[in-house]
Image 1 (cartoon, rainbow, N blue to C red):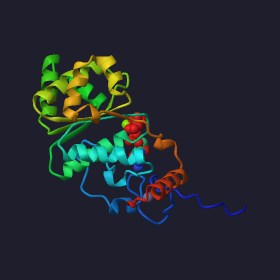
Image 2: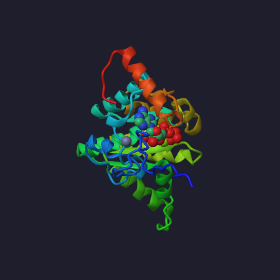
Image 3: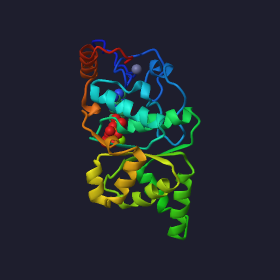
Image 4: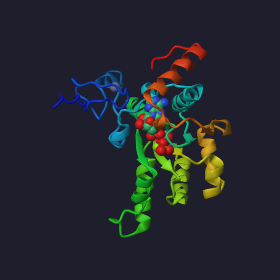
Amino acid sequence: MPASKKISMNICKRCDEDFPDIEMINGMCLHIFEKLEGEAPSCVPNKHKYSRFSNFQQISSDHTQMLNFCRDQLANNLSIYLAGRQGCGKSHLAAACASELNRLGRDVVYNTFAEYLYSLADPSYDDKMEAEKWTLKHYASNEYVILDDVGQGHSISKLSPLVSRLYDENRNIVITSNLNIEQLAQEIGSVIPSRLTEMCGGKDKIMYFDLLDYRLLTRAEKDAFAEKYKTEAKIDFPI
Ligand SMILES: Nc1ncnc2c1ncn2[C@@H]1O[C@H](COP(=O)(O)OP(=O)(O)OP(=O)(O)O)[C@@H](O)[C@H]1O
Ligand SMILES: [Mg+2]
Ligand SMILES: [Zn+2]
C-alpha cells in the first residue's frame, strides 16, 4: 500500500497556514495571540474572543475607513451604527470595540440582538413588564451597549425602548446591522434613527459599508488585495 500523505489537522483559520507542531487556540495559531492586547469581556462569544482592531486586515481603503471610523467613535465617546453587507467584518469590529473598551476599564456589554430579545421575554419573570424593566436597567448600567445583528427578521421594534433608554441616560450603543439607516427607519419609524444619529455625532457618521464578503475571499486574494492597496496608497501598516 502506498504511504498516504499526512493530512494536517492544524491549519490556522486566520493565516490558512499549516502548523503541525504548535498548539492552536480556537483554531488559530499562537502568532495571532502574541500580538493581542487585553482580554475580551466574557459576554463576547467564542467566535469573536480574539477579534481586535489590530487583526482587522486592511485590504482596501474602505476597510481602513471602517476600522478608523470605529476607533474614532470610541475615542470621541460616541455611538456607532455599523451597517454593511454580510461578511464585511461588522461583528469583528463590534467585538473589537468591546475588547478595547474592556482594556480601557470601561463598562461594556456585548450581546446579539436575539439575546437581548430573549432577555426581554425571560420566562422566569411572571410579569413581562418586570423582565423588560430589569433588562433595560441591566443594559443601561453599562457605558457602552454593543448589540450585534439587528434586523435579521426578529422583532426589530423592540430596539426602540433600549435606544430610548440609553439616549435618556447618556449611554452609548454600538449597533451592527445589514440594514442601512433608511431601511431601519422603514422598519421602526424615524424617531429611533433620529436619536441614533445624534448619539453617533451627526448624519455624516451614519454610513453603509459596502465591502466584500471577507468569508468568500481566499487567503491569496486577501494578501493580494492588501499588497495592492499598500503599494497604491504608499502606506505602511502591519498586516
Ligand atoms: N478585514 C478583516 N480582517 C480580518 N478578519 C476579518 C475581516 N473582515 C472579516 N473578518 C473575519 O471574517 C469573518 C466574517 O466577519 P464578520 O462575522 O465580522 O462579518 P459580519 O459583517 O458581521 O457578517 P454578518 O452580516 O453575516 O453578520 C469573521 O471570522 C471575521 O473575524
Ligand atoms: Mg455579524
Ligand atoms: Zn495563524
